[in-house]
Length: 244
Image (tube, rainbow, N blue to C red; front, side):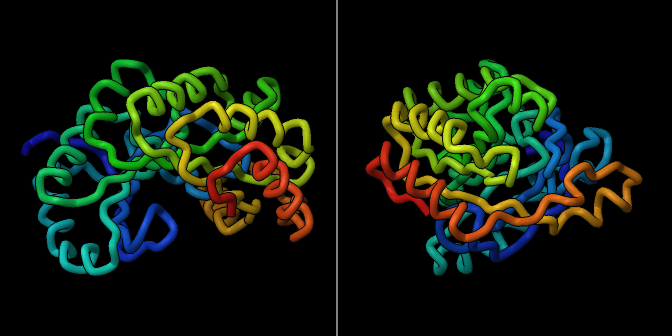
């Protein structure tokens, strides 16, 4: 297939981007400007490398036996994959046709047209909901929360399994009222399969410096274990699925 898109990179053997061992493709371009982004080098939609679905499938298929043996598949991450819906749709369709389990790692910030193109070829969604409080969400991401909530509702209505991810950032997302709001919404998603609390980290800070960007969370430290446990406890109060 000649459909072209822009990717930042790919990684073989990830165990944290969906079930099993994954071939992960990081697409280029993201409309969000998250304060704690650990891949700011994927933001520019004109950066990265232009490639075709054929070229990527050639690489992916080299590892088919490996991902099969590891009970994994292919994950499309970013950047924001839904910024290139035609490319991502074609890629996921080809992956499914070749027998790969497919996962989409997304912020859910997308149009209905993009959803219609991509979701038919997705076996699992890894969805970030970064805050329940609208004002805080916009401060964190520089975009509105509503498109993400709408995306989650549509995915659930289409019976696509969802793993929800929540980044716990001290003094930003970690107050109990905010966490409970996300948990209450998550409880309305009938296809929710698990929740992952992701403690804030600074592994991508050096990239901000390399790009000449101001990293506003320099003084923020990872949350204490008891804070992570508190967040897990709040989610467990509202959900029956596993919370990690």
